[in-house]
Image (cartoon, rainbow, N blue to C red; front, side):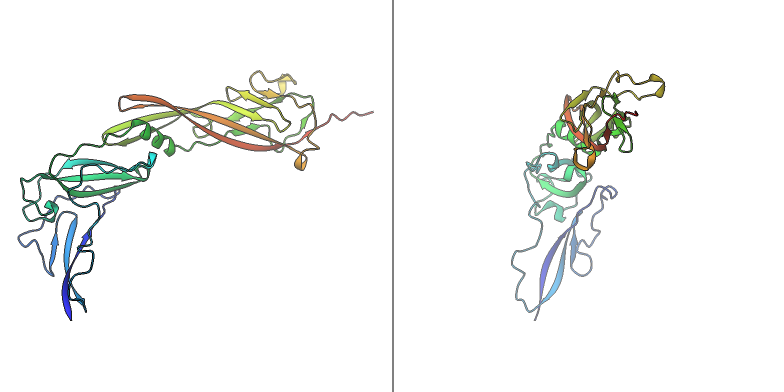
Amino acid sequence: MLTRGVVTATFIVLAALSAPVNSYAEDDPHGSGGTHCGLYTCEVAVDVTGQAGGQEGGSGGTEESGGGSGSASGDDGKYANVCTYKLADPQPPAGSLDWEGHEPGDGAVYEQSCTRNGGDLTIIRMVWQADPPEQEALDPAVLAQRAVDSMTLLGPDIASPRAAGKYTVGVPMWMWVNQSATTYGPNTASASAGGITVTATAKVSKIVWTMGDGSSVTCNGPGTPYTSSQDMPESPTCGHVYSKASAGAPSGKFSVTATSTWTINWQGGGQAGQLTEVRQTNVQVAVGEVQVVR
């Protein structure tokens, strides 16, 4: 036996698509084949074999549809669901599914735009509201973290010491790093949502070197490159002198770790603040004894 049921399909529009089209059904809103469409929702009448009535669960519409109380947001930090609203202009015609059973003049239909996954996903749909919805108040600090997450902040790009270098006990070692936007800064990015734009600028404020021999060195800059004309003095900005060879260390080399602290200043939405990120890079360094020729 064939019976007729109604299935409601809800279409999700991603931010990558063009803006929603404000078009509605023509003179015959049901169209052919028993299809009744609103701006984003369609009811389709289908024949179902062997059932006397519709499926349990009713129309199959989304749980979020209809008469919600404005914005919907989760409590999951930078991945929070942030929703904004814009009055649909023009308003849908009488009988449109977008009215959710209400008549024009009874409340209004709004275009709801919600972002998720740190702003990577945007869901747009039409919702009916009895009263103008309150706009989501987004914390600018959340946008600041989103801007930082869009940066590619890496550990130090170590120029010296080198894994292939030859270093000697008692001889000053000069340490320095190559500077780029991703390894030292400055690195700038912005993030926007709900009419707010926050801009963040990140730069390495210090590099802590753990030398593998139990000592550490804190350098407040990128270090000074060594040139052979300088003989063998200690580095004026970032250096170390080994007092023992690496022969007893694993693989016969000291494991040197350079840990950079990124300081990020941000402002926007009438606020300003500071964030910190930490990155590190490792290099294996061989340090030998001075060979005395007799």
